[in-house]
Image (cartoon, rainbow, N blue to C red):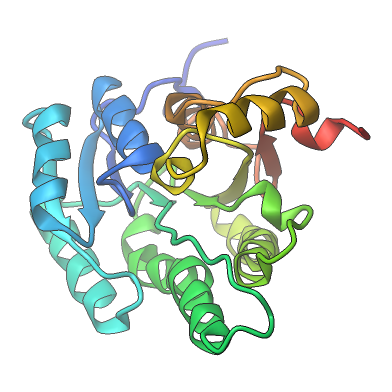
Amino acid sequence: MTDTPNRSRSIAGRVAIVTGAASGMGRATAKLFAAEGARVAVTDLDLAACEAVAAECGEGARAYALDVADKHAIARVVAQIAEDFGRVDILVNNAGVSSFCALDDEEYDDTFARALAVMLTAHQRMVRAALPHLRKSDAARIVNIASTEGLGATPGDTPYVAAKTGVTGLTRGLAVDLGPEGITCNCICPGPISTAMTKGVPDEHKVIFAKRRTALKRYGEPEEVAHMTLSLVLPAASYITGAVIPVDGGLMARNA
């Protein structure tokens, strides 16, 4: 059987937008995509941080300041990316915020609203802004980054849990709506990963948690999530859509 564009295991020359790409899993994803030959739009709140990541990615990457909670900024920046690169093939919705907040905390309503704005509403806005350009691609791919908090819950984390659970449902809905056009949409649920969000957790507590809860007995690294994201955006990943995939070291597989 001869290889065809839709069976290719290369993203060389493809254009990818990655949100929340200034650090953590977003940065790892942008760098991996660039290493695989893709041209990458590195987006995040801090332009200088984006420029640093774009420099790490090489000359095929560009930096864009983007607050995904701002619908007007999304429309403007996605349009600019499409103009600068001439196309959009891949969208990775990765931007997120920590949202631990007790139910009776006076800041709860604001925290809940912010969590939904950044980690759920922004995802669908990014998809809709990119959709006219994705429709022109012969292998359009969308990957939403959720969390194992979207598959279970940690006490005191309901804003984050609600947002990430919403992402899993949004992913399935998008997969069904966009499937007839050949556009795939999948969701990754990272477990305990060493990122800025978990930086404040003492190392000894991370070790205890990982040994108690994960099959692999350790925290994961951002690059390990990025490799799953890469697998889902390959042109060859043409029959995978609506999937919700834990990348969690076996956390969800354990009963105790």
